[in-house]
Amino acid sequence: MTARDTIFALGTGAGRAAIAVIRISGPGSGDALQALAGKRPAPRRATVATLHDPATGEALDRGVALFFPGPASSTGEDYAELQLHGGRAVVEGTLAALHRLPGLRAAEPGEFARRGFENGKLDLSQAEALVDLIDAQTEAQRRQALHVAGGALRRKVELWRAALVDALALVEAELDFSDEADVAGCSPARLSALLSPLVEDMRAALRLAPASERMRDGFVVIILGRPNVGKSTLINALTQRDLAIVSAIPGTTRDMIEAHFDIGGLPVTLIDTAGLRDAADEIERIGVDRTLARVETADLALWLSDSGESPPRCDVETIRVATKIDLSPAPEGAIGVCALSGAGLEALVAAIGRRARASLGDGAAALIVRERHRQALEQALESVDAVLIEEGPLELHAEELRRASRSLGRIVGAVDVEDVLDAVFSRFCIGK
Ligand SMILES: Nc1nc2c(ncn2[C@@H]2O[C@H](COP(=O)(O)OP(=O)(O)OP(=O)(O)O)[C@@H](O)[C@H]2O)c(=O)[nH]1
Ligand SMILES: [Mg+2]
Image 1 (spheres, helix red, strand yellow):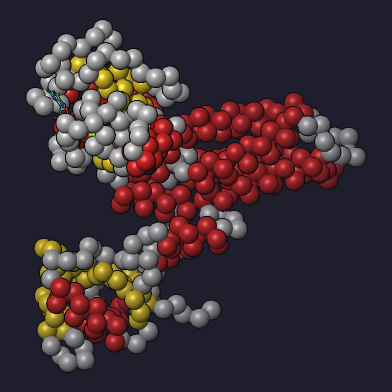
Image 2 (cartoon, rainbow, N blue to C red):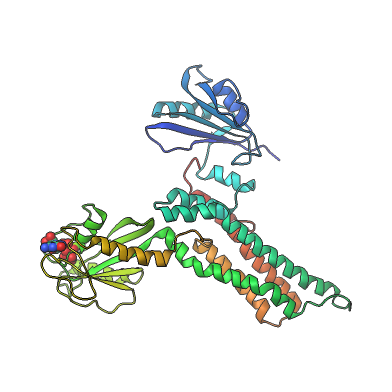
C-alpha cells in the first residue's frame, strides 16, 4: 500500500482571532512538527514551542504544539495540531511553510473527517451529525446533533443489523439442512418472533423522523393577512430587527421576507408575506401567489387581522392574531397584540413555542434526522415486511433479509456509498 499524503489546514475560522488552530494529519505529521517546532512533542502533551520557517529560519510564532500518534487520534493517523496566535500573517506564514515541506498538501473540505471515517473513528451518520453540530443555531438543534454524533443512530443500526443476521442464520440453516429431521425448522412463527420486534422498533424510529428532519430546517411560521394589518411591523417586533419595510400604504410588502428566530431553544423561521387581496398591480399579484404557494409547506400560519375578520380556510394550523389592539380590542379566540408597544407579543411567542415543541420535540431522542436515513430505513422495512407477509420460498426470504441489511448499511456508510461519501464530506468546511 502506498503511504498517504499528509494534509494540513486551518481548523479555526479565517480572520483575526485570539487563537488559530492548524491541523496536520498523515504519516508526515511528526516530521512537520520537527521541521517547524524543532522537536516532536511527547504524545498527547501540550508543548510550548517557537515555530520557525524551515526555509528561512525566521521565527513565525510562539505557540502550543500537540502530537497524537495514530491510530489513537481523531483521524486514525499520526495527527498534529498547532495552536497559534490568530493573526493573518502568523497563519499564512505557517501554512506556507507547511506547504513547502515534502509530502504535505492542503486538505480538501471534510478530508480530516473523511480519514476518520475511513479509519473507523466515526460512521457516516456521525460525520453528517458533525456538520449539523457546526450548523446548529439553537440549543435543541445542538442537542439533536450531539446525540447522533455520539453514535445513537450508529448503535441502533448495529442492533438492527444484528437482528437481521440472526434471522438470516435461521433461514440459511433451514436451506442447508432442510432434509434433516433433527434441525428445528425455520417456521414462520420463529421468524416472526425474531423480526416483529425489529419492525416495531424501526417503525418507532420512522415516526420520529419528520420531527427530527424539521429540527434541522426549523419550524416554519408564515404570517398572513390583508394588506396593512401590521404583518411587517410584527416580524420586525418579534425579531427585534428592522427587516421589513413598514408603511401606511397597503401593498407595501411584495417579496417574502424570512427571519430565523430562537424560541425556547427551538429553531423557528418566520415569513412575512404580501397582504392577501385581489391585487390590480402585477408585481403585488405575483407576491400574493407566492404567499399562497408557501403556505402549503409551512408548519403554522398566523392570521393577522385588525378588524376581527376570520382566517380563510387552509390546511395549515392557524393561530388568529388581532393586531393594533391599541386601536380596538381583540375579539374572542384571538391573541391580541400591539406590535408598536410590544403588548401581547409574549403570549404570541409562547403559543408559537408550544406548537414548535409539539412538532419538533426536543432533539434528545433523535435518530433518523435526514431524508437519506429515512429512505434507507423505509427500504429496509419494506424488505423485512416482505419476509413477514409473503409466503415465498426461503431463498427469497434470505435475499430480502440481505437487502434489508444493505439498506441499513447505507445509513452508516458500511456499504456501496461512494456517491454518498463525496456528497457528505464535500459539505464540510476545509479543516474539518
Ligand atoms: N396603531 C397601530 N398601528 C400599527 C400597529 N402595527 C402596525 N401599525 C401600522 O399599520 C401600518 C401598516 O403596517 P405594516 O406592518 O406595513 O402592514 P403589513 O400588514 O405588512 O402591510 P402590507 O405589507 O401592505 O401587506 C403602518 O402604518 C404601521 O405603523 C399597531 O400595533 N398599532
Ligand atoms: Mg408588509
